[in-house]
Image (tube, rainbow, N blue to C red):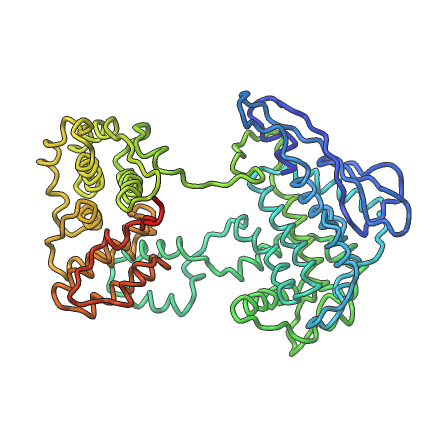
Length: 569
């Protein structure tokens, strides 16, 4: 948020300038009256009394000029800036810094909680100390980091802030979950490695056991086919994540890490032993994530600030060692990334409190703008959602007038292949089938006569078309069952249909009824159970499952229709 408020991402002039002030709680002691000025705001002391944990954070928020309209943004408020600057200050100065007073009190109480074998301050030097007096080099470090951060390109800025937040959260977890704390410290580096290491995996990086099996399977394939298969696998596989983590970390460890900085550490790690220590750190991270395995006991006692321990001859980074390494790597990443003074950027979806949500179909299903051959499934879904609400009797259900849209579709149908046409044909016929005569499109009969055959074969579109037009499929039962399974297997694929849950239950019940008529009662009962579990808690489906009668027809709409309160009159 600090980068957005700086104005460097704006495409238009500044529309508003807001001054904000808030309180941060910290063990940092500001020893002089002059504030610490940074590119993202400034810090001021509140009092010199010993028991004060508060500092004042002030910043200027720039708001981009926008057309005057109801609901136009005038300010984001102070909270997002407090939260982000607190994490950055905590990372840069190696201190507790948070907008949450209760969290600050808990972290700085330095109490050993149940299940934790040492106090937080015994694992990390300085961070949990009762008082940390701000020195000139601390001020310079914060100023440099904030300036470099805001100067980053937007993609790099977001990645760096995520890494910083993860690092700080990892240190907070030292108070209650040591394994999670260690994992988060590793993740703070790994998140950068995955997006910015420029890694291009080779076939030799592929998991060796899988690679051998695939190579054996490709023995009889021609060289071109084998290369394409391997390339496709490499594109979808995360190659050697541990190796990428190690290589990225080693590439961002500075010379100063082993020199001036190391002179203040107990047993600092050497360059030659760092690769093995990184391998062990990543292994411990993986063992916790997959098996909830505990760290070696020698690492959880908090006996010293040494950077390494060596159980069973393996060099392992302690919390102190891993934290110092992560701070070095993240800071160097920020320093090395390209900087820019201005970068026009659409940040709307990154604003605090902004979310993306699918609009209700009435706002888009009938829109003719942007109509392409590929949008048939989405339009069919939208109209089916409206139609389902209408059929089951939901309050205020309505159908959008699609005549203008269908007129455009009619001109496009001749140029489409059958697969692309099906959802459009289903949409066209269903709308006209439900519309009053005055709302039917003039070309309805011609379209139905020419293209209705597209919906005769056993396809997903045809299955839902048959459901909504109340025409039982004429396909053999195995074909109907195949299409039913295909839909549920592929419904989350990007270009496939995803219908409302009530219609999903409907196609299951229609197939169950066909099996009941064929006297395959086990299959019928299985499909009823499937419908119950995919429309959880529906009272009539639960009742049907409990009292399934081999002789009673399964009528999907009667079962799924909304029950009206007969007592209200």
